[in-house]
Image 1 (cartoon, one colour):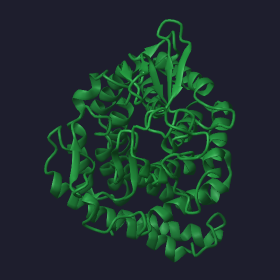
Image 2 (tube, helix red, strand yellow):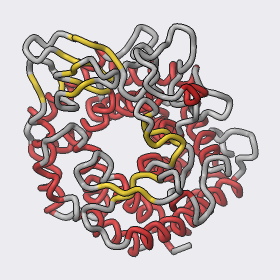
Image 3 (cartoon, helix red, strand yellow):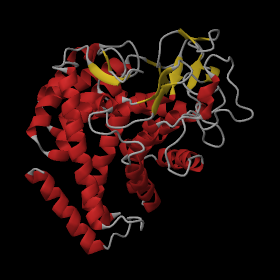
Length: 424
């Protein structure tokens, strides 16, 4: 371990000794094991990521890690996919966890290849693409050009906002996965994750319009994307002229009326972030209610199935467009990683230690041999058993780069919690 990491862990040890581990669950989460847990994860991730970099070679703008194919080989993607920001972001988190300049250098190399995206307006995922990469770069190793790139990216994202709908358009016109329904202004729950970059842009530029767009989108989503029990729809399609809701549906979930687990995860994270940025209590209430639904539908190990209602009575796909063997509910580790990261923040804002306890349990379960890969396997991704899109028969029971990203984010937040948890 390098000097910075040893210093962090020594502070962790001191806090444990002084506080008596008041918020750490009793099931063998003693000081020594927690320190070993952090250290072992960091060491494993550093080794696995080194192997990943040997496989990818230098960044080309076309070789961002995304998943693994059925033959166990790495699947990469180009910069205009929605996922290229996650691998550079993971490298930044690894730098944050280790303090090792090697990871900083790699993170800078992979981040800089994404600069052309600052003017991209083709879909809503620019927050994932640029804030996970350049946002972490600006936070950990700030340069004036990083702020400029992020601000331009925020304006590019804002260009997809419509006053008529009160939302940022997620995708352009497309036919739904049922092969029949047309969506002309689809807004997906994932879009909540991209609003953070607008808040950054507003603070950087002083342009309140960026702030207002984020708030308006969040308010419109809060009004139309959730059922009375705070379960979520994946897609809401709006009339482009009147702004009236035309369809509530799914694209990656089991059925239009079911709850796709990663969509619920995006919502929990998104509204927790909205509270942090605005201090508006309605967003914290939403996050708590969304989390309550999520927690009430988890299996014993706290890792959700890909859809909370798949195969249940009353939840039927419009078309039998994918193989019925997938109705047996494979797990989606990516949803768990997103919620794990969100719960560390939600605990801070609600002052409720049960969220911390759940996040720690999730993090330990994700780190177990059931979900964390063996060194050198899993196409050198960290976590196994995620689900991309079962309706599209894509990335089923495979590693996903964004699962790894939010796992690393959770480790960063856990380290910060251990350093300061006596204030919770």
